[in-house]
Length: 197
Image 1: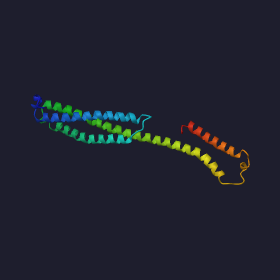
Image 2: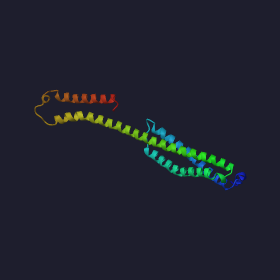
Image 3: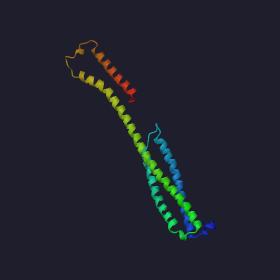
Image 4: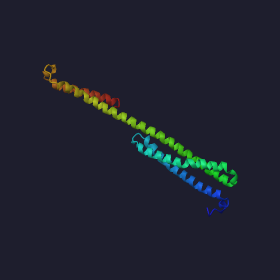
């Protein structure tokens, strides 16, 4: 400010403008950096091969909430200075302040849009995790169904009945094993065709 003699000559409101301008410009810098982080998380969330880390989204959402708490009060106060104290400010300082208010509004709007975007990303990530869990449950259910066939047949034969017709057949035991293998193969093929496995 000491190098800007022309601006210093405008009085204490010019100093206030310089401070507010510096603070608001730093808000804009932070929002640009956050945008890069959000874009990276968005790519990861909607990537079909990447695992989604919801914790990372929550951490970034918390940072956005903290930034919004820091930025929002300044928006109100800058608006009040610009509207309530017009008679104390020169036209040049008012023009400078209008520029700062515009930048502050831009930063606040960006932060609000980031908050909405991260809320959508949380929902998308939860949906993706839910879909992955459904896929895992289908796979588990398919393997349980395949394992249930030989378990059931072995359970029946394990009851040691004397009057089972195939017990006296020469090919009874291999026939039952072949039936179990065919039933398991049939189930495996159907589950594969339906994309459960």
